Image (cartoon, rainbow, N blue to C red):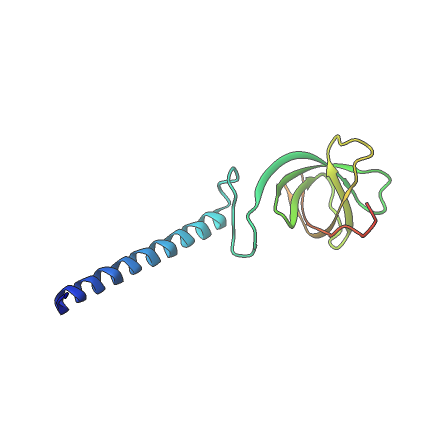
Length: 141
């Protein structure tokens, strides 16, 4: 049978381990939040407190078709999530516009993805555009 002193010692050790584990988890979460707020580390997935999913860098050519324009415009996909993407383009895109996207240089028969522009901001000599992917239409492209 274990003595009260031994049981108390075990309880204290168990409590200390729980405190260390919880403290480590809080430290990791605080570091991830600070990292995301700093805007560095674009080579890795970045999570910030406004998003529900990690962003992954893309840096790939894309085509952006904006309603009312005669032809698709070139763009660059800067990063993406399962729900959307951030694009760089030379001209602004109206917030709320329902646009079509696809990879740059894609075959003509490749279907376009649908997205809604959620924000558009000046960036350098062009604009960054935040798009939220729209679900595909049943039986559509």
